[in-house]
Length: 319
Image 1 (cartoon, rainbow, N blue to C red):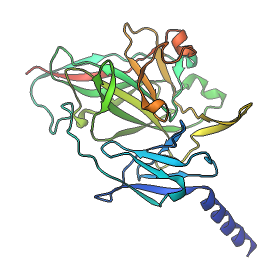
Image 2 (image 1 turned 90 degrees about the horizontal axis):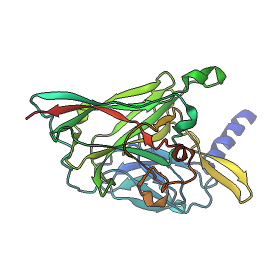
Image 3 (image 1 turned 180 degrees about the horizontal axis):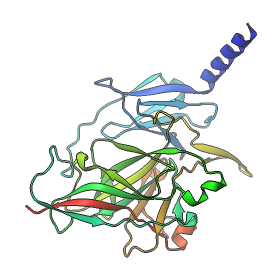
Image 4 (image 1 turned 45 degrees about the vertical axis):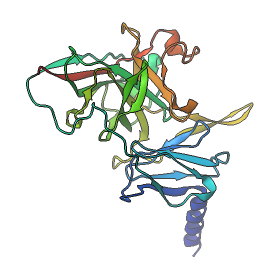
């Protein structure tokens, strides 16, 4: 009986420590995958593909409210003392941007390419964390109807360092698109979700085929963003991995965002500044150009590595 009793005690104590929740559409009751859950203190996490996430009041004792959001839904604030097992978000009716078409465009087209820029230097690479999002600006080609066929994503999988204990991993990323306004990313553009995984076998340039998503660039241009969601489990689903590590400081225990592999190599070779960043759980989610105004202490910025060299392959329609 003792082993059984120990297991029961363990399961009971675990349920006290971490509460399991699921996010659903209030009208259809369908799950809403990969929602953003902000703790309101500069920290946060994401739901998985089944809309599930866990929250520990013991680990985040200073958090009294969760702010839950997803594209196409009204944000919902809910007290951590009143968390139900199922949370419902209300859909928001919004007009689709011209960038997303209901059907693929037909006719003659040319293939154009913006080359991706990469390298293998770990010290001039961005460390992806769950709190950061990186966006790159693209314009239509030749002033004509331009579809993004593929995104070319520079990555540094640390292949040359594998002998030093770097093991296997698979990291789930999300691509989102934003309208251009006043030189910054603005309103998120509704489109079919684009979520994918990169593992340690990939290196240099990861080609992501998004032709089926029918993403067309408006005349004002468009921002494509890359955001890490976390590590994947053996089945390819988002793992409930630790998003923050606790560090003892003179000010007490501080939660520091965990960095995820692969790294994102930044470049000092692009002629113009085209990269923008934001911390999605901090500073009211404001976008900022990645230059000295963002962080004067950044080693990347100080050394001139201010752009993420994301490339793309386009279909430029002639009619």
